[in-house]
Figure 1 (cartoon, rainbow, N blue to C red):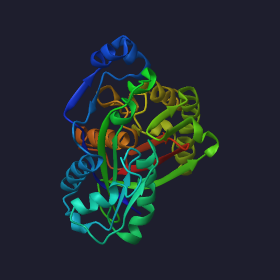
Figure 2: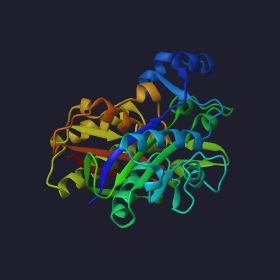
Figure 3: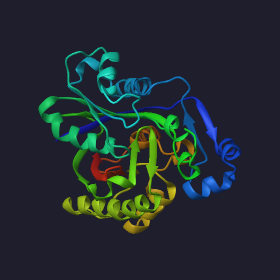
Figure 4: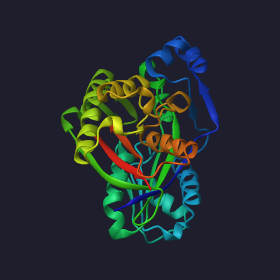
Length: 309
């Protein structure tokens, strides 16, 4: 059985408001908020995905109270690396002073951190402590001319991190479910630096598949959605999170949301949200369950269930 020991996050300093994008797109700032729930996002200056990952990893390790030398593996989710290979995992390991542990890249946009957490939970008992990082710089992709107003308003940059430990932490991982359906692989993709998204298909499939996988996971553990105090979901779109809450028949406020401040940071978003929630809620009741969920390109999706200890 694996544990969540700590989270960490890092976002760039530059804040890009809806007013700034409105002037560039010729769309009202209020329209941007209404269709996405986003009021501002962060964009990098000169930082790289590795810079963001390293900063988030340092915060996570400090919060966990362990040295990087204690790590047995690193899993990095990143879909916006400027080169095809190697990805940022090995570069992050190098920055942390690690030269012999496996550092593996997971290129699953949006859902990659959830996939990595699920894999880490299964591997930690065998390998030891595993650092999971999601790091993305979406702005350099979606702000490439010609701009697509329905896409470029959504995304921001940032990194989140989570330490999965085999025998200690503040939360016990109870189980997870992950799934894929390649029938929709054309509906959300990045090819030759061109981002393409069939928004209608993404919202439709996500609003069906996320509640279903959450319900399946909870049923396996004899829990109902109403038993879960907090849902930590990929921050794709506020309207989508509201749809998922409604489908599960729980209050929308149970879905922690910081998308208004950071936008959609792809595979970093769930961990950034978790780090913020974890920091704001230091005292959790023992046995209190909380649930992670994500959906992304592929399509890949899943859920992970944990409880405070």
